[in-house]
Amino acid sequence: MTGLSPPEISGGCRAAPVLKQRGQREVFCGLTGIIWLHRKMQDAFFLVVGSRTCAHLLQSAAGVMIFAEPRFGTAILEESDLAGLNDAHAELDREVETLLARRPDIRQLFLVGSCPSEVIKLDLNRAAERLTQLYAPKVRVLEYSGSGIETTFTEGEDACLAAMVPVLPKTEERNLVAVGALPDVVEDQMLALLDGLGIENVQVLPARTIDADVAVGPNTLFALVQPFLAETHAALIRRGAHQISAPFPLGEEGTTAWLAAIAEAFDVPRDRFETVTEAPRRRARNAVAQAAAKLKGKSIFCFPDSQLEIPLARFLTRECGMTAVEVGSPYIHDAIHGPELDLLPAGPQISEGQDVDLQLDRCRAAQPDLTVCGLGLANPLEAEGLSTKWAIELVFTPVHFYEQAGDLASLFARPLRRKSLLGVAAE
Ligand code: SF4
Image (tube, rainbow, N blue to C red):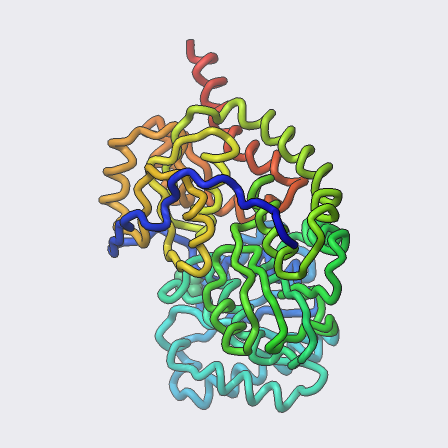
């Protein structure tokens, strides 16, 4: 496609100095990703090799889902299992045998590592290879780590997808792979838009089932839909695929820029692009404008948590009229976040990593109208009179692409509305 002008850039933050701090962190571990991945991948099972703490985290995070026949479980390693690592491997084999006998619907089994030192000593890679040989071709066994020592909560998805990339079939065909888990309804909207643009041979990773024909090779182009997929990005590049660099499909502008980058790569005629995107763009703009009335002129401070912070700050500043004070992200990768930083209006402190006490001091000094942070920080900050938004909610809620742009703005407007209602009630 030619002639589609990129969104107007007002300064940008790509070259801004980044404050890098390392200290105590306040984040969930990568096991959390299982909660949305198990819904997405209909023939997968996630077997966490961990402690009772891990089982507890999963059960409470999954809430009511545990009462359904879940697609995740925990192989709890007791002290006694660890007298010898061979015993632990035998125990794991027994757990897997029982599980697969009981659940013939499982086609992909993920062994998910966790924190206890006994688990770290266990070679899950070797276990996955051994079990794959044992159960092939009916079941594919892969492993990744969701350990809180190694991963923040969205890195669990990254580790899972990165584990899948090396075993994807090879192709020489030109195809597009959209990478990152989206709720089915949002994924269908994305596929309809790409279909409208006339782009053929589109696949998604993770696919809903192992039978989906996701393949990768030197003619594969991939576009990330989530900004926390650095390992998966690297794994795809190692397989010879090429990234379509773009902002993320959050908000009207992000969605249009994401689609435009793909349209450019696939030579979609400009008029076709305009025809396909014109109506949903208008709907998205109108929906955002309604919700953004409450956000305009307000300030926001983002603690590093979901890795969605930079695209969200771009959306909130450019489309909702907010001012960003600080935008923190656990990790910043130029290849992934660069196009977003280009669009983020100059001004905020960009920070990577966290020393939570120092960052809390900065937040208190700034007194932002809205603070995006993890659950652990939200309650104390609310008690101090600051309005907060839980970062984790943004990962569990459908927020991508045009039809969700208004909902995305509403998520941020809600705590402000609540605060003004409480203020009125208190008067
Ligand atoms: S932080 Fe470690 S021990 Fe705790 S639930 Fe997560 S993986 Fe398990």
